[in-house]
Length: 248
Image 1 (cartoon, rainbow, N blue to C red):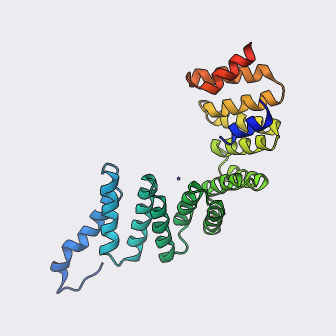
Image 2 (image 1 turned 90 degrees about the horizontal axis):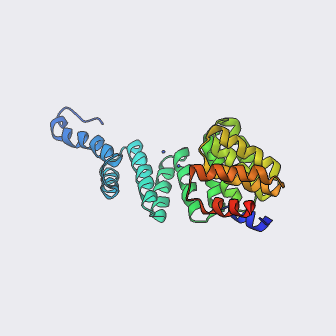
Image 3 (image 1 turned 90 degrees about the vertical axis):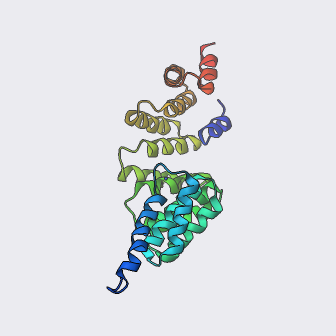
């Protein structure tokens, strides 16, 4: 596969009341935790959970609860592909708590999805200042750097993610993609091998190691990897086509 095609394929987720009012206020005091629970329900429909979060935000002045509800509603809106609304919710959480790493991280994720990579990098960088030991933040900032074509910065972030979480197959895989995009196929193959060691059923790691091995001229190793991909994912069209090409 030519370098352009290889690169194209390779570049192919956080009351107190006075005694005289106690009786009258008790139902409302109890309702908030219930609404917050509904906001986070694992079984309710997304629209119902968003409505529950909105009710919490409208009815409480407790900042911690409001922050939690804004973040959760942002997650739900993100899941519903209401990305602009999700950004607004995370921004409200950040206004209330400028040290909320989760809100910065989540907003960064949405900016990345929107293709606003500079804003994504800025939010991930703020999250890292607050929580410098979270490998996911480094990994995701690395992906935004990748999207900006800043491969060396991306590799540095993936490397930091690996230091923080040595069993993170995703960080090895992402670093392998970036190394391959730079034409460093031997180093890329080594990273895909690590990703496979961590998750032997990672079909895409086998595919990309095969591509790297092809670029290195090792067709036998590439064929073996494509065959493994088809064991794991029999309908994988790229692996089918590549194996046929290498076999003929």
